[in-house]
Amino acid sequence: MATDNPSVALPSEVARTAGSAVGERGESRWSVGSIYGLALGALAIVYAPVLVGLFADWYSNPNYSHGFIIPFAVAFIVWQQRARLRAIPARPSHWGLALALLSQAEYLVGYLGAEYFLQRTSLLLLIAGGIVYVFGWKHLRLQMFSLTLLLLAIPLPQLMFNAVAFPLQLLASTWAAGLLTMCGIPVFRQGNILLLPQRALDVAEACSGIRSLFSLISLAMLVVYFVPVRFWVKLTIVLSAVPIALCTNAGRIAASGLLGRWFGPEYSEGFFHAFSGWLIFLVAFMALLGEASLLRRWTTRASAQPKAGA
Image (cartoon, rainbow, N blue to C red; front, side):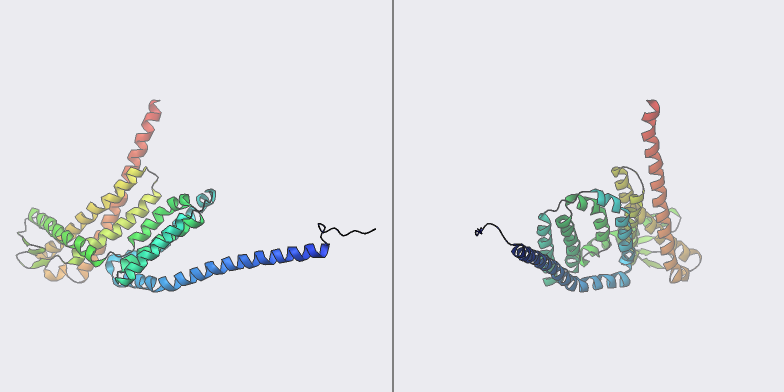
């Protein structure tokens, strides 16, 4: 005698229920993916003009022409760190959303105030927030070096740039006047203008050394990444880029005065002036590499002495 048991489901009903559950799960996944896709599309639309303007600044502003190599350097560093990134367990944090919201607030302030620096740095903060939200804080800690490199490729606000450039003009002209005096050439400094017997040297903003300073600091960051030394040694190398850039720039200005004195003013202008800039920057970079090599040897030798004594 057959009895109806409501707790037993027919196979057709089980299949129908499972199919509907799979369909709902697939629809849910599709909806989440579509939300992420729309968010990324909106961000691409928002930041496309920002990136185009940044590339235009790299092309037109010689102070930041080193920015073209930074994305490739960062891509190489991230690729080289791929094994370490895979080894770190992903621990997503909702604080990444807070960083993302903060980045968009920064972008809004920059957009309303027509401040490109805030708009561009908000992209870095957004990337940091995305890393924390998807992978966690440990991944962000490993990528801080790459984000710092990208920050060095973003032009400073004009107010900050002028606040740095003008003191550097006065410092470069003061040091160059001292070098010319040591070489026996009478010189009178009036602000950023050097009055020589044959001519006057105007230490303009382009000759302040800020161009080589930004580029040399970025190269110093790349150098210390590949030098296996302690953190304080890496920091010393990066900070030493500042006096190296300033000293070599003062030497370039003094060399221009010497060339004008010995061969005529035309030899300290035009092609010779531009070529001396490249040559002096190469000298500064070689000095930085020499310093990094010496510090590496010194630290290696110092760390090996206790082991030898033991």
